Image 1 (cartoon, rainbow, N blue to C red):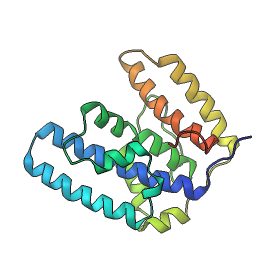
Image 2: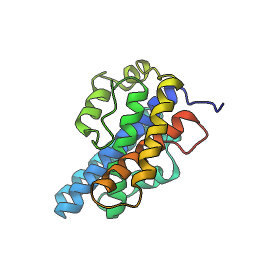
Image 3: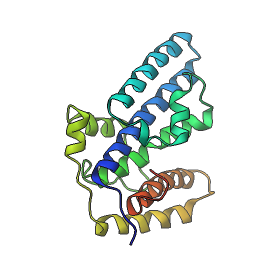
Length: 188
């Protein structure tokens, strides 16, 4: 049996994904508006995120790709990277569910709501309280969800329309669930 990540490791990955989804949302607004004021606001947010990552000792948890994305000047993310960053909410939702901060996963054809995920993290009032209150669900809860998600991805990958949305949801959720089963897998 593979070793699973610890409660703290999953909490820290959740915080990184929380920051990544927020940054992707900022990049989306900048790309949509092409407004120099939004770029300046994005740069202020980027500097604050850098300080936050350091203060919360999350810099070592970042993947190389995340490190590059967080370091990039606001307004420079390509559209496909923005889209990928915004889809990471599905991995974040799975991690919050695994930590029991979210009671249930939405059906496979429904996306997590970012505002709900943010509230689940922010409701603790501090990152240390968030970390202290996460308890990983057992393998018996994670394994059947992994199997179902894997099946949905296999059935919808490469399709169009609603199936493409289900494939995107499934891919992100499966990525997170795979890491929850094996800490040596690519992190969620």
